[in-house]
Length: 117
Image (tube, rainbow, N blue to C red; front, side):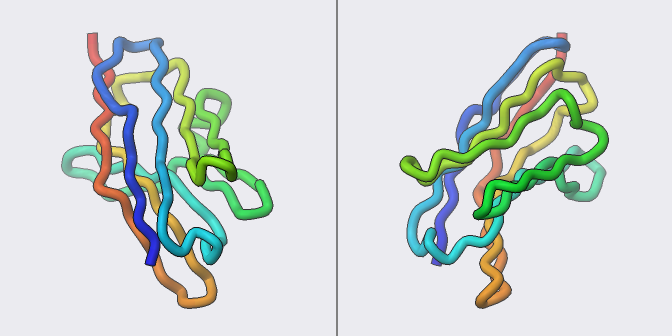
């Protein structure tokens, strides 16, 4: 089992920055990749960024050049640094972990990000 706890959401003005954190606990040695997803009201959940256990990263086209995903193995935590935020980035952001051996998805509870003046 893997437990994920997000933090760092909030209200920010357009053009501002936020950093989200996701702390993992439990069977963290089994995690193959971690991701940030987001879901805006009335829309489907979408992948924002991902990072593998080997450190490879990927991003949605809509956030490339503005968001950076990173990990701190010592703290069992991943981060999402979000810069140049836009109103369309407003959503609940979810941390996700993927365990290939058991083909299991784990989700955090989500953290609200609101970009508004």
